[in-house]
Length: 131
Image (tube, rainbow, N blue to C red; front, side, top):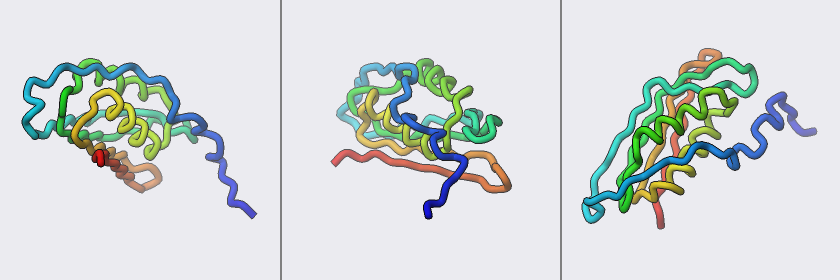
């Protein structure tokens, strides 16, 4: 017998969500290897089960290649999630995939530290390192 959960079906097609475009600008130091850290200490989204707000600190560490992320557009991208019901794990995966698709970094790591829900703090990380 399968373990059925009331979470079933809440996140269908989350990877295909159309989020605002992340803009980039030309990196004049593409020949240099360096790291950029972006911290979003007041990130919010919605719990897909309860509809209650989730709060998190998101940290993005990346090494730019040809492009750097344009911060205002990235802020608008993060605001897209404010009223969206999304699991923590799906959020970090979606964010990483969108970031890589637009910025094409040498590498990137995105970590989300979500405030306790039911007494449990959730931390989700995903990295991209091209082969």
